[in-house]
Amino acid sequence: MYGFLSILPPLLAIVLAIWTRQVFISLFLGIWLGWSILTGGVFSGLASAIQACIDVFKDNGNTRVIIFSSLIGALITLTQRSGGVQGFVDWIQKKNLVRTRKGATTLALVTGMSIFIESSITCLVTGAVARPVFERLRLSREKLAYICDSTSAPVCVLIPLNAWGAYVLGLLEREGVQNPLGVFFQALPLNFYALLAVVLVTFISLTFLDFGPMKRAERRAEETGQTIAEGRVPVVSDEVTSIEVKPGVQPRAMNMLLPILGMIVMMPAGLFITGNGDITAGSGSTSVLWSVLLAILLAGVLSIGQRILTVREVVDLTLKGMGGLIPLGILMNFAFAIGDTTKVLGTGPYVASIAEAFIGPSLVAPVIFVTASFIAFSTGTSWGTFAIMVPIAIPTAVAMDASLPLALAAVLSGGVFGDHSSPISDTTLVSSMAAASDHIDHVRTQLPYAATAGAGALILFTVTGFLLH
Image 1 (cartoon, rainbow, N blue to C red):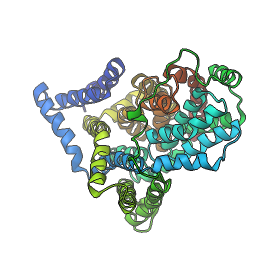
Image 2: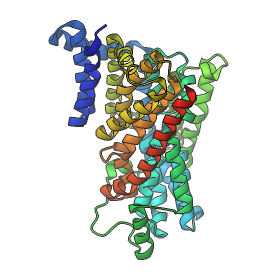
Image 3: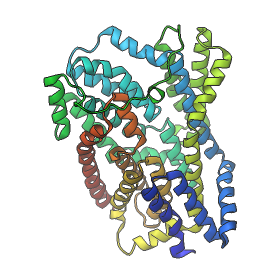
């Protein structure tokens, strides 16, 4: 209906995000422009843009996802303050389970893949558990940072029972996708970059067949004992790395493991209940909200029952944790709002009509992958990329009769690849912090591995696109 004008809002969001690297401002300005086009005025567009952000909460699924994502912060603060995370670290070290270099990398690998609730906590727990062992066995901090990074976002994006899964499901619901959970599951084996990144980090961790700058870093650490290069500055921040255990508290791994176990068990149970016995028909947003609420309840009850924390302290830590993830909630709100805006403008169908003149259905996925990778690398955020690309990719795939799961997988793979390669990515920075590595050294040593998996993903998207069409 609006033709070329319909692509200007997401285009503005992309250009501004790349230029300013301010995803929040870029997304809102895209929303504002969209509603200015729809209402025919700048000031009326501003009013409508603000209302569009408010209207996001009219959708129960959107509200549940935003609340869930904020509550993850509460779970993190409670398990750290109660000594759960530290207890887990102490248990690993006390058992003396790791005696070889391969054992150290295996420990980091298994830990990273086991803590898949949220990408940042994955990095932090993996770094805390493995860093002392890596130091003792002369393994480079660059290798630890790579393992932390490659077992965070690439693993989290493959799991439906965390903030990543809930966020993607919410975006799909906003696009009117029937059975979004089913589409998500169909996209999992097609999420080629995430799968290849996990396979590659597993291969490197078990075989030590490093290449590029990482090979030199490992040789330096093994031969000289310098786990970080001379003159480099480790990126360590107590505020980001962890919340200190409450003084006088005996750390216990149970205080972290039981809440996480409860969360994992509650997810399929919630899907079963909300789907009336059919897990694939259950509500993902409802199930993840129930899961994290149960995890927080368990963490609070354990802390109070052991007299580690008072009820007041549990409430304060819950609010503190939620407050720390307010930026994430705002991002998700803008993501849903710009999706609504492009839907009203008809951006997806228009882009699809243009694309049909240049590419066939078989090339939709590789084009989406490359575009999403570029945006994520330039902005340092996979979630912001999902917000921009899903409202375009899904209608395009439908209009061109291309595979919907493959198109979704291309968006997810491209977003994670670009984010994984970007020096301004949050998870890349947190991985450097968790490993106490120099940040630029982490980026430089990881990039060849990310590029290898990215090239493989592009080939697979191209081949699969032709095979399916």
